Length: 369
Image 1 (tube, rainbow, N blue to C red):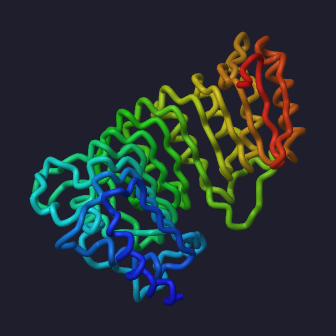
Image 2: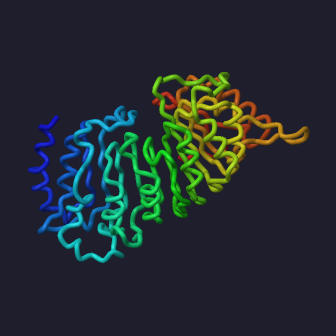
Image 3: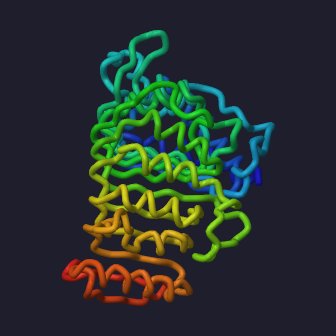
């Protein structure tokens, strides 16, 4: 395990010489020590050499997702990484850079998968806001991912709120079993955010996060529940007691969070059919729906009798449905027949079985060639 970590200094001595040419930096390991060693080298200030001013993407990944299920980080002896976050990339000229200039001006994408940083340090030195000074926004960051972090090394509410505020041009946000446990410490507005993927282990975290996030132009939302047992609810099991998505979905249904939402993806999201019905009825703009091991959402697409004279149609603009696995085909067919009897545009559909075991349904002429 330490053998690969010991190789890092020699590797980076060679790579640092060409740093001025870097467009992307990606480090992937299934153990922590090589990542830890690389971070120590990347956090050391250099007195000579070039900087990574052309760098557009940083991706650091520890592939052992299972360790993020625990509150305590492992291995504990290497939990902390010293130094200034990614100082080596900024180069020796960084000390003279104005606080109003992002240290890495072309950086667009940051993905930290199973890799944590000193979050305050990361905010101030990598995103461009020196300590004890007013926040300088990193106007280049367009995509940010924080995934699979143990509870004790996640950013706090203040740290994460500050990180989002430093990225006002953010278009894509992935928060998969990471982020603050107490939600945002203040309202954060991300007017350019179009895609949000949120993976939750505790639904209360999601409610607190969504209540503080203002993203009126969001078009694609993905929700991912953690499936530890491999158990998937049946459409006729209407209790949802084993899953904690009920309150999160109700919050999304009763608060107009994303009025322009066009695509919704649900992975291992389990709740009562009635809750899914509330959610689907609250998204009239939805074009595309993906359901991965989320069978209770299918009956929720059936027409709703709101009064004696009115039968409402959830998701009336729907163009396609993708489900996985195909074992839920009977429930899908029943839902399609109920929709077809209530709205002419749903009377014709094209169904395709995918090689990975899923089914995709296209309505009308909505299929893209």
